[in-house]
Image 1: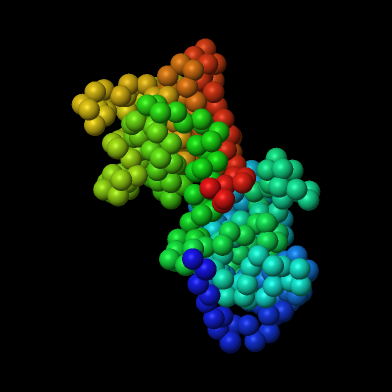
Image 2 (image 1 turned 90 degrees about the horizontal axis):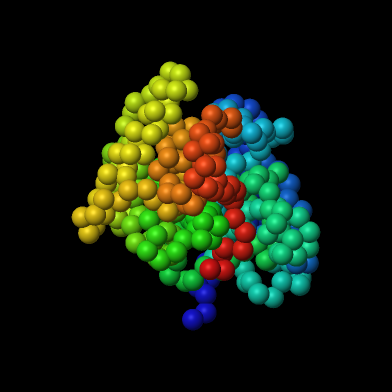
Length: 323
């Protein structure tokens, strides 16, 4: 089936070199600016952004002008979960046409090859996607005619989940715990299920998020994380142990107690959740560090080392859109 074409609005492409961008200049300082965009080079094309998701990192940048250890050092155009419509193509572009719907891999890889890019893709970019932008064809994915642009924008956070599942090496009949039922947590849970995990448990402090995950089939079972908070590190670690123990008492769909899990996808970045994740993982299991929260945390490293629990970082993705 040939892809459906969308006729770009004439008012939006009257002058494709003049664009409007939503630019962050400081904490809660957003400004709409008119910028000049050079015409696409021979192997580039220009996209009119039609849908952009709001990532947790965007909220952190907006509120604090930073995200964990990443500091903003110059005005930043927010947005990286995006899809749009091709409005201009370069002279050597043959695989895309004006009017086609595409999802954007809004990264800035180093080197000329995707093999190099897969090792060096950076997490932030000088230009975000809440603007019309240029792009190279290798970082675009054509959307099928029946896929709405809003769903196309979700390919970016789904890429994070695919990358996390690959690094976790999810195996059939494995048990998985996901901390955080936000967008990335939901997609990580879905990927764990799709990869064969026999029991996927999702945990959140907000009961409504847990219920949403279960009602929409993202996970098999849920767990409401207690809101208890300690003052000293000793109190915090005891609470983390209790949280892990409570999660282990949840029964799977066969009525069996889950116990320690094979994999944990930690999608909150919250210290207490990562502490509990280590205690909830079986010896030889893996904890995937996905959430970007508190940059410096106190963790029970001995509990991980003595039980050979692997702590594995996950930052963005590489080569996932084709899947």
